[in-house]
Every structure is written in C-alpha cells, then in structure tokens.
Image 1 (cartoon, helix red, strand yellow):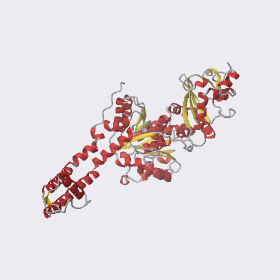
Image 2: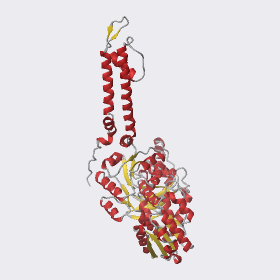
Image 3: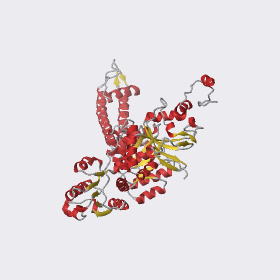
Image 4: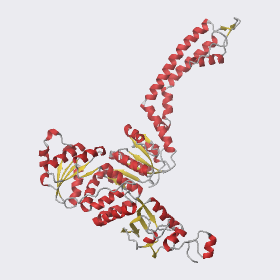
Length: 576
C-alpha cells in the first residue's frame, strides 16, 4: 500500500487560542483604546497655564504620558504645571471612564480564561509543542482505561515513551496524576478526528506504533483504518470485542487484534490442559520484575454451568465445549439480574448448579457476577467458582467472596499488548507452550527462577548473522560451536551466564528449550530469557573477537596489535 501524505494541521488546532483571544477581546480592547485616545486628545486640547499664569497647552506626548500612568493607577502627579479646574475636571472624568474600561476588559479576560474552548485550545497548543519536542521513539495510546493504565505503567518502567489521547477529561487529567517517570503528553479529544490523531503524533517521525484500546470498537476500528491509510509503515495493535470488527481491522492489514472476551475461554482452556503452562505464560507477559504468579490446581472435568450474557456466555461455552466438557449455558438477560426478578435459589436452580463441578459468572456487570457467585456457593459449596471481573477496582470484593479463578479483561489486554510490544518473537513462542505438557512448563518455570531470579526475566531475540554476531563468523558451520559454549561468562568461562534459551528457530522450524549440546549454524535465531547484565555479556561475546576466543576456545588473546604479532594470531585470536 502506497504511503499517503499526512494532512496538514488545521489553524484552529495549532493557533486556535490566538484567534479566540482576538475574537473575544476585540470589543474590550477597542473600548480601552477609544477611552485612552479620547482622554489623551481632550487633555491636549483643554488649555492650562504655566507657573507665571500664562496660557499653556500640553503636547500630545505629555498628555499620553500623563494618561498612561494615571490610567494604570501609578500616579506620579500633575505635569509640567499644576492643572486648571477644567483640566482636573477632564482628568476626573477620564479616570472613571478608564476604571469602567479596565473593569470591562478584565471581566472579559476572566470570562475567556474560564471558557472551555479557550482552555482546550491552550491545552492542545501545549500538547502539540510537547509532542513536537519528543526526539526518542514513542507509542501513541488511544484510550486511557484500565488496560491502558496498566500498559502505560509497564512501558514507563521499561523506559518507553508514549502519548495518550482520550475523549474523557477525567482520564486525561489522570495521566498527570499517575506521575510517570518521563513526561507523558495527553490530549483531550475524539481519536476518530484525523486531524487530532495527527496532532497526537501520528505523523511524527519517531512515532513507532499505535495502540488503540478505547472502550468502543468503532473508535478502535477508525484509528486502525486511519493509521493503515496514512502510515502503513506503523504497527497497530487494536482492541475489539466483536469478531466482525476484528475482521474489518485485519482487512486494513491490522494483524494484532486483541479480543478480551475470546481470551477468557482461552485462559480456561490452558488451565484445563496445563496449570504450569498458564503460570509460565502469564509470568513471561508480565511487567519487568513481576514475581511468578501462583500455580493453580488442575481444573475439574465434568459439567460446567455458565451464567453469561450474549457473546460473553456464547464465546466461553464454545471454548469449553471444544475441550470436551459438558457445558450448561444460562443466558442472563441484559447482563444483570434485578432483585425483583426472583430470589437467588430460583435463579441458580434453573441451571442445576447443585450437581455441577464448576460455576462461571460471566456477565458484563460485576455486581451481578458477585451475586451469582455467592448464590452458587450456597447451592454447591464444593463447586469451582470462576468469575469475570470487569472493573479492576473491584478486585478486593472478588477476593473477599472467595472466587477460585477470576479473569480481569484489562489485565489480559495489558499483558498481551505488552508482550507484542516488548518482544514480538515471544508471541511465536507462547502458543506452543500449552502443547509441551505440564511437567515441561513446570520445569521451565523452576529453571527460570533458579537462573534469573523471582522477577520477570528480560526477554530478547538474537540472530547469529554477520551483522549481529561478527565475532562468531567462521564458527557457525553447524559442527563446532555448541550453545552451552556460547553462553559462558566472559569474566570466567567456567561459569555459565544466567541465560535460559527458550526457543531455537532454524529454517522455519522451531525447537523449544534447546539443549546445550545443540550445534549452532549461521542465521539461527534464539529467544533468550535472562538478566540485563548477562544479556550485555553475551553481546560482548558476539561482537568482540578476543572475548569470543576466550569464551569459546579458552584462549586469552592480547588486545595489543604488537603482542598479537608476536603470538602470530589474527584479528579474532585464531593462529595464522
């Protein structure tokens, strides 16, 4: 798709404040100017007298000077001679006129300062200047709901810059209250307005991507389409609660579409297959430094009862049936159950909860979900209780009621988007995790904790190419360099680096957690997990020939050219 030129910013966006001031303050300024001009002219025409009593008139400049300090209440006195009665009468009149004129002008100015349009114009101008001054790469975040807040906090912890646009004033104000380490410009406006989206940084040279997580699918679709048409080079991650809207997004080459409703069933399916795999996937997609989440027990197999509304229940029941479960779906009209529509016993009995192994409350209303969970617990104390938590602020309520597994859509979205932004290669690794077995996943979690610590490890990809690993050139023939040899500590090769290989990609084939005896070839790609200092050490081995010679061969090569000549070694430490 050919790149189209970005639309020019409209004058009412970049200079709206100036034009608004000129329009609103035009009459007050004219009134002040007229009063001042008449006062100066009258004072210069009224005759006075000098010290000897002879007739004398003030010049235009002297009148202008006198009226300037009189109208501004400075009051130096009469000049150059004491005034006559007529002059004093005229000055008295002009003083009252000036007071009225200034009161009118100041009142109009105060009214302008309280005007919402003027304040918005100033905010947009300040925002535009802040975005224009950004020199490092940044992400454009559309919408500032719970998911975006969690994502923004993680991005800030990683040192990534971002810009926010939202249509709610309270959310825009919350960006400043959240106190990020780096400045995070925020714009109040509708992201469907192309000019506002451009003002928010879509056309900026260092904008590295757009994340559309607004609460409605229409806005996210509009942002995805606009970005695809105006900046086809930018990656787009968009949220959609509808498969139809998701297909429309993909039609505009938006490959990364996150559907939190669809993910609810996916999470339960993974838990049914492998609790350790679920623990691993959640941990690897968490913010840096996050400790490993708790590992669930394997979910019960039997009859599940789902109380859902519309697509909430339909999506979930379809996913669980695909796992071979017996599912009973009870539709909750409108997404909520009012107290006047029947007592809890009647509602729960309609789904036969008493003989079910698990109960799921999956409506878009947290109050309804809490009410259903409590009713289900009374009907069947042994049932495994699952609930959809729509608002993150209600977490203490779901914890207090004793939900066995709760899914927060905001957390699901934030985790997935963060994984796609931080390391796209990780998203090619995660779908394979549930298929490796529970023991494999549990062993990998234990290995990561033992090697990298309890915080989420740093994840990165390396390609064993001439550009990324020049020091390894000549060793990547598939017969000499083992993976374990590459991952030795440059400070002491007897100790391995704190790095765990997660996957090896070779000629389109993927090997999960390759062993240390694997022989490496040119153009191999490795997904690695470890600590930042070990990542830097590996980078040194891959780029510096002397370090590579010590790490791989155990030969310490002098860095001086003279000593290398005496030892008859080439530039990378091998004998000539």
